[in-house]
Image 1 (cartoon, rainbow over the protein chains, first blue to last red):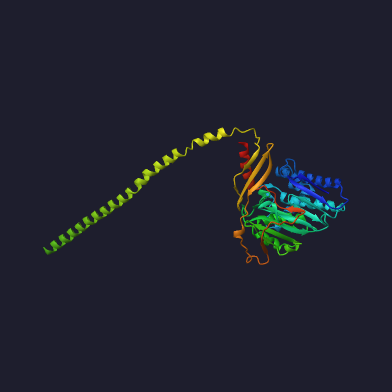
Image 2 (spheres, rainbow over the protein chains, first blue to last red; image 1 turned 90 degrees about the vertical axis):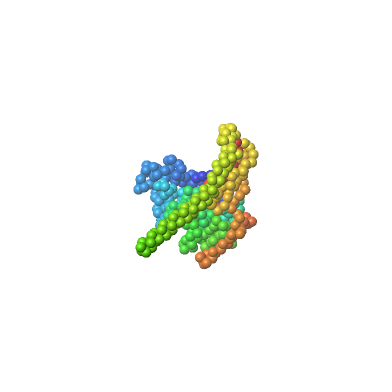
Length: 245
Length: 170
């Protein structure tokens, strides 16, 4: 059972391979994404993020979910030496973490319902579990940053998260908070981790670092990366090849 | 007496030398000023003539008058057809799109240009990062279940798309 809906300004696809999958369960997960969008969208006037930015709610009296996101933002900022920064021009925008966080939560909801083989993909960020329709590992392609119709790498996964940050994505998120510039060395970086939240938050930060991003990922435990530079050369971490089959 | 004659001679010699020097300097100055003044004059007279000619030859006054008449904008509706956007710089090369309009809406966006001419300048930098591996990216034919990637919304893409849409209006 597979369905796609446009939420948070991007297509979200859920595929459940398990035969006992019900449309109601899919709807419940999509509804969760709608609620996340309502709460965290910086573009919606009444979202909690907008109310924080408009000083209608104090940072000390936010909802428990917002507290989780704020804590995760702080943690990520420290772990990435400030390269991840949810504040842009004085406005709080946690989008760089909310996507991965919501995919992770949605995946956990499906697992609680007893599903073992499925994936959730939102705007190019993916969490897979178990096996695909053919009973094989999920085959995740990395899109060619120079041509969206092409896939330039196939990685094989059973349980894991894949996030790609790139030039084509979220133009306002890719600027370096340290140098206040936009790096031009690399065009895309893909991060593979056991969960999509970690993959997403480190992909955002590693991309901003430019060439140093892949060295940064190499130093992290449980993270592998595949970086493509402006000349079409890919550099990947020492453990990345284990996803080749 | 001899002393007076000698001193008079010396003074005279000085005066003669001084006059000679003055004349020489003057003559040098004259030559120099002639050289300087002779070369700029033809250039100075040429440039105004040329710019006046080019101003008259390429009538810039015609361009502004043509634009308003050529765009009697059709209330935001796009004309059916195929339109090519301008090439826009995307840092690492150009992006150029071609759009197809049918029923007044974009029915297809095609990439005419994207930075792919990279075969010649592949630099493998293995020295700086000995534990990292590198490869030149290559399109894969294998089927995949899901694709990870960034969505196409770069500034260059939007710029090229906008210029194609502008053409579709006129």
